[in-house]
Amino acid sequence: MARVLKVAAVVAAAAARAGGLFPRLQTPLPALRALSTSQSPPRVAGAVWSLGRLNHVAIAVPDLEKARAFYQDVLGAQVSDVVPLPDHGVSVVFVNLGNTKMELLHPLGNDSPIAGFLQKNKAGGMHHICIEVDDIKAAVTDLKEKKVRSLSEEAKIGAHGKPVIFLHPKDCGGVLVELEQA
Image (cartoon, rainbow, N blue to C red; front, side, top):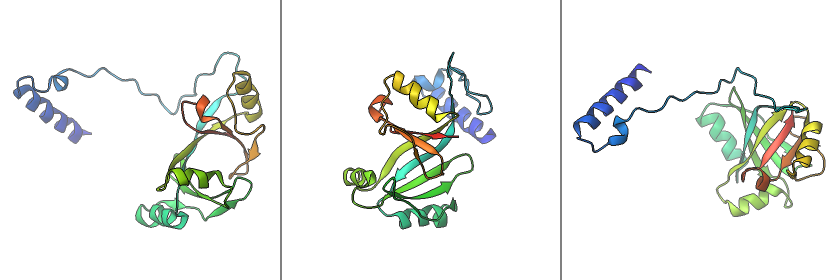
């Protein structure tokens, strides 16, 4: 931290000597208040369910073994074995990051939704985020009332053996959101 402050001071001094070439560097930045992860998220008045923590970020990969080896052998991450999930049309590998996980997804069969994603994104890429909820049934009911569409009528059992449901990206700011029972 001290090194960062020292570098910032050097940059600010250089900007001051530059005679106004870098006016933004001379303007103090507003103080930002960071959200603490130790605080409970605020509940919506009358809500019967609430969001929990980020469970995982899912990455579609064209070569699951190559991606698995990269995270394990190059980055040194703790990586699971390959787990086929025929009900979801994917094979998955989980990369443990301590505070969350990454889920590496690869198509299992030609009807896999990941096969279509990889046809459009040959190198792979971020597919969805998964957020835990304390009551998935209440969440699904409430979100339907709020006109948030899901990709299935009811939750299915996901990779962690818990109920999951995917929310339509068009109703979630362009992001495919998976909710998982905590």
